[in-house]
Image (cartoon, rainbow, N blue to C red):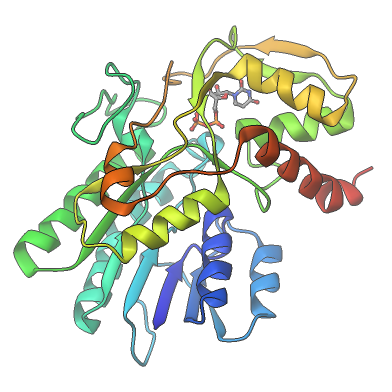
Length: 314
Ligand code: UDP
């Protein structure tokens, strides 16, 4: 198949593109580098059957030739981006998704748009299943992303209902692995970077808030299964093993054999207190289960940081 991947230079997009190429597909990767990395794009450029287009998807996508699938992963997704890029995030989640839906419709292509656990906000139901409508502050610190992604789900559903578009909506929970940016701002790259430098690990608040961390190869497997399934409703994709942020910090210190200590810093506004996916729908409808244990995934991510990012900063 010929497949478009928007956000191909980002963390998840780069892994997904490699996987689709390895499966024998032709991939046109699109990115405007607002948060994607040029290093990821350069690595992809060396692979056969890959074509790169530097493009902002809020403008019409001009790609000639056939296209059977569109994976839309183009959006800054780290909470540190929600401040400086709030308008760009709202634009890509609305005009950008709209452009790709029109593109997919014109080609008769199926479209998967990356949604997020952030649609559940600071959840009052735990764990979160797809039937939960969420608890989101529409004018809060994270609202550009949370409401943007909620709008994206509404837009896909409207295209499905009004035009018969084939849509897929993964709600992606916290994911980690190689290719994350060192300055990404998210918990794991931040903690690994700090531990490898012997700097204090900056735990927000008392660190009793929880998250559930999914290794990127598991997530990519879920995305591909969902795309090739017949499920047009949202599907949670994430690892249901939940830990506190304090525990994650302690595990990183242990796995890096670091002398770093933990320091407590103020917790950002609207930071969800808990997050854990109910993955029953993915298990039953896609036959999907995450398989990479956290200790293994954390260790692989640490090795990647040591071999790449820290090689240049030691
Ligand atoms: N966090 C932290 N220290 C950091 C970065 C993040 O304690 O340096 C916390 C953050 O407050 C949140 C959790 O780790 O409770 C996960 O944050 P992340 O930015 O990775 O993603 P989120 O789940 O908030 O989208």
